Amino acid sequence: LVLHNRLRQALGRDELSLAYQPQVNLRSGRIFGAEALLRWTPRDGEPVSPARFIPVAEESGLILPIGEWVIQEAFREARRWRDAGLQLQLGINVSGLQIYRSDLVATLAAVQRDTGVPPGMIEIELTESTLMQDVHAAREVLDALKRAGYGLAIDDFGTGYSSLAYLKRFPLNKLKIDRSFVTDVCTNAEDRAIACAIIQIARSLNRRVIAEGVETAEQAALLRRHGCHEGQGYLFGRPMAAQELRERLGTPA
Ligand code: G
Ligand code: G
Ligand code: MN
Ligand code: NA
Image (tube, rainbow, N blue to C red; front, top):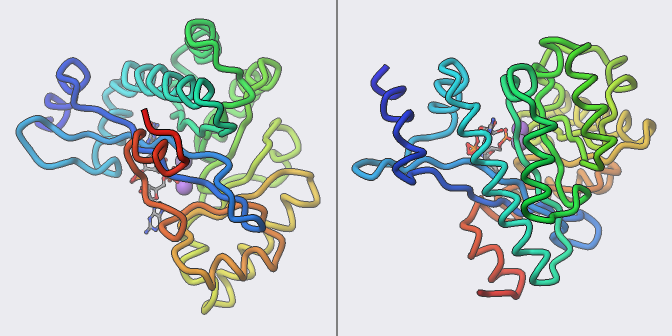
């Protein structure tokens, strides 16, 4: 409850920010995009981890205004990239309430109009469990997002309860292999088998596949050898301030 009350004030007090974590092509090593990750640093306190405050935001409904702020802020950054001539994709996390209890399609359309960011620059990330809450409603929203030109990624793939058949029914461009399968991918045969199975499913269905939580060159090499297209993790970069990522890509300002 205390956390909830503090979180309620966070937006107005300018305490939220987005960190950007690079995503790279495992063959070329090139950064092709980034994921926007929400950060909360109360004015008079330590940063609160998203693992703690995002569940609170979801239970209280605060994720609706916060999620809208995330979308606006992320599109503003994508606009800066575009103005700087950077060809980068931006991943934005969206929670179930935004799909089922708000008009996500309309929110995105309005922010898209205001910022002029091409929808193809944006990839919307949803978790498996979000999609499973109401498969029919989720499918309508995803179809509309797809028609509008957005990329769609399924986050934490392999951790939720889902049927592989839904992969066919949802217009997803990309599977994100959950970090829990990547951490020990070099030493644990079961994790490796699961990671490789996800890579194979993605490839045979013509979807992109990205591994999360890549921390070592060995993990990256193994995943690449098994056909994984893309990687994200501390090996390539921690979530960083917008300006830091822009500087790293050679366009300060
Ligand atoms: O950034 P990491 O540091 O700890 O993020 C923890 C979790 O919070 C991840 O599962 C991530 O998907 C989720 N998350 C991060 N940013 C956002 C956001 O803007 N919206 C939603 N709904 N979830 C987010
Ligand atoms: O959306 P999602 O669940 O994937 O959020 C990614 C989370 O994983 C964030 O909390 C981010 O800070 C964290 N993260 C990103 N890269 C790494 C990594 O290489 N190792 C570990 N342990 N965590 C990571
Ligand atoms: Mn994510
Ligand atoms: Na994830």
